[in-house]
Image (cartoon, rainbow over all chains, first blue to last red; front, side):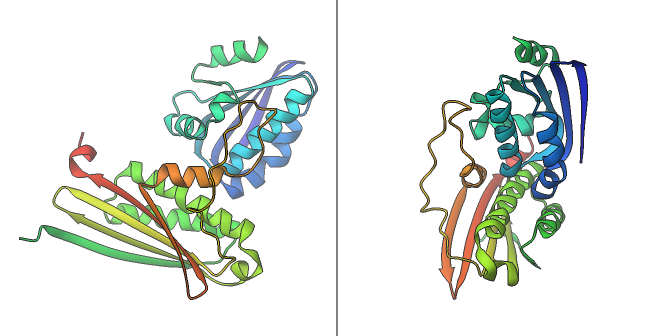
Length: 114
Length: 153
């Protein structure tokens, strides 16, 4: 379970999460994920392409951080790449209608910066 | 003529805590592979078991946390078809997820509230769900089915 980030510039950050986002996994990344996505006016791409399992507790973390970011004038989008399992989870729960979801990294960057 | 080919039962007893949830997932994958459950169904059962156990931990109360949670895996295969019934029983507060009203999906991120996702995920990943409370224990059963023809495509 890892969470890493790359600052493309002061307003644009890519966060990459890997591994199993279950109860333990969410506990392991929650504080860092919130801190990384808390900056005002920041655009954030969260890369879930290397996530092996996404439970409801992990989805709640995505939503709460995306909401907080939006309230600060920022925007979060999700990158799933070719991870069909995570894409299916997000679609079946309707989260893809709340948080834009992309399979292509360039498109995700564009949407975050739009 | 009875086309019955195989039937197997596996059981596990765990504590209601987060570390044990991951142990339950490992056990589930092991017994599914042992009994030839298709990979796609293992993933669906993994969601069911995780969300059910998460509910027990979060909402079952003190009794749920102090008593064992029992997992009962029952699989059968016969001519061309197979199925798994996975039952999770706990001593926590009685709760029938089948009776819980589905949450209305929010239309905007601002309107999204936490909660209800776990039930939705259990419902979408199981072919059939059943619940009873017997002798003070919640018994929630997930059923998934497959056909050999679909598996081999």
